[in-house]
Image (cartoon, rainbow over all chains, first blue to last red; front, top):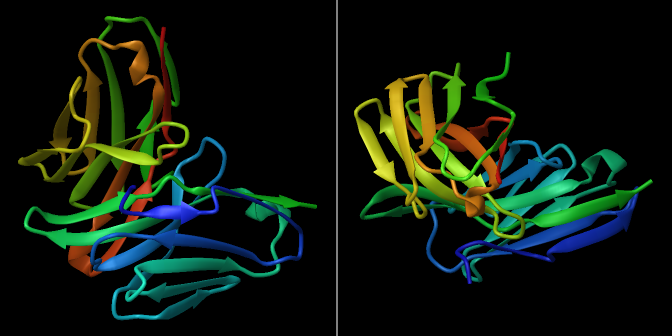
Length: 113
Length: 114
């Protein structure tokens, strides 16, 4: 499996509901980032959580990090049709080769109006 | 203007042709990256550069080459394009020296090799 794996691969919800996406990883990290990608467009950075942090908020986004379980979750509250996109987690690692960021395969979120 | 600009946005080329994808940035970031995205596989790193004199191979560099012409410009070349290089290509920048590790991405180049 990859360093960062999102779960589920796809999620379909009604507008107004909350959406939760999970990311699991294998090795120790320096930080974990979440990105959004609208269809065929570039990724947009949403939020970064450092390894010594447990929770961060940004607007309707809430990210948690559990380093003991090597997992993170992204919660989007009161979802809107405009939240329809793919969401990627990216793990920032520091190793002998320097600092690197590894992206997962993403969760496709569809919010029905 | 976008912070990270990629040209062209779309390109169809024939097998065996040489093609260059260009990336320019106005972020003032030292680090630049080229990624490839295939359906279901997320992003895979092709090459990265931490400054003008520093070029490094990523996980899938075979068949690709890069040139860092200036701090703001980083181009990706396919010397002899093949159909399995059909993908969405992204350029990105970062500046961890500021303590912030997020990436800024361009809008992508959709490349089709026929």
